[in-house]
Image 1 (cartoon, one colour):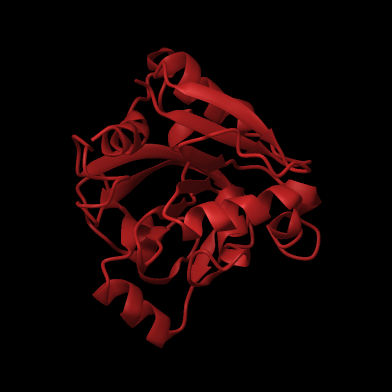
Image 2 (cartoon, one colour):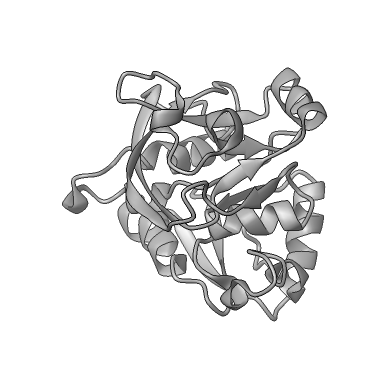
Length: 231
C-alpha cells in the first residue's frame, strides 16, 4: 500500500511539479494534482501546498489563495486530522488560513534569498520528522517573504507545545543570527499546529530529493510522512 499525495495547484504555483516529481517519480508514492477551483481532494492521504507566488502574491503572500475553493476542503481535512504540508508559499497560505500560528513578513534583508541552508530538527516525534535519519538537513530556500514572526505569548505556546519543527543553523548545528537567512524570530524555519498533523516550512525539501541533483536530505520528510501514515 502506498500513501497518496494531493498536490494543490494555484495560479502562480511554480513548485507544484517539483513536489509531484519528488513524491511520485523519486519516492514512488501515489500523487495527483488538485486544482484550486475544485473542492475534491481525490482521496488524498496527504495534501501538499507548494511553493510559488499564488495569485501573484497580491495583497499579502497567501492571502488570496486562502480563499480558493480547494482551501475549504483542505481546512476541513486538517481539522479532522488529515495530514497537510505547506512549503514556502504553501506555509504562507497555511498561516493566512489560520491552520498555523504566526505570520510571515518580508526578509530582514529586503532581498529575495535563494541558496542552500542547514536545518536542525527540533521536534523528533512528529509524523513529519520521526523517521528522519539526520538531525541536520541541507535543503534549498528561495523566498522574499520568509521572515516568520509571532508575538511573545504565541512563541511561548508553540515552544511549550513542541510545535517548532525546524530551525535554521550552521553545518554544525549552531543557532545564531548569521545562519538565519531571513530574520525569522528564534531562527524558526518550520512550524507545526497544536495537533501536529499540519506542517509549514519555508525550505524546499522537494528540491532535495533526487540523487541526480546531489541533494537527498529532503527525502526524509516525505518518508516520515509515508511511514507514519502506513503504521
